[in-house]
Amino acid sequence: MPEKPAPLRDPKGLISSAALFDPARFAGQWHVVQSGVPGCSGAQSWAWDGKAAYQVKGTDCTGATAQLDDRIVLTGPGGRMIGRASYGGEPIWVLWVDYDYRIAALGTPSGSWGLILSRQTPARPDLLKAAREVLDFNGYDLARMQP
Image (cartoon, rainbow, N blue to C red):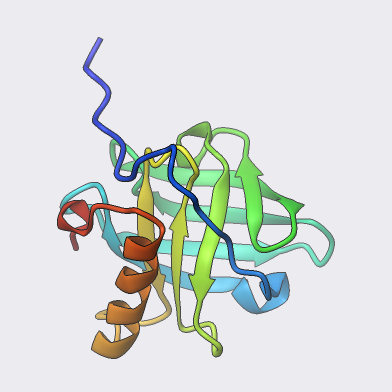
């Protein structure tokens, strides 16, 4: 069995999610522009059901690159979610999304994965910088977050 990589953040450190998360505005097409999996990129489609869940399809960059097709359910306020099999089976937290929902930083309390999603690719440099600052604030090792 392959050795599990070290977390991208100290799981004992504090982590926060986006307090003003709007599930309907988060829906739509996103592109993975950075993750803890070097070279992993691709699109993700987040279809909101209008109630409590998304149907998400695309590329999963939270471990070995894989195809994503899962129902992801909101579990609490602030963009906290979980899927059945995607995202390494870990809680999905939207750590930050800009006001216009153009870029988002996602992570998990264990630190096993982290990624930045953007509506456009390449991401706007100023928005990418802001998303990386949020990951850094939440204890992520930015040297391991790559395009």
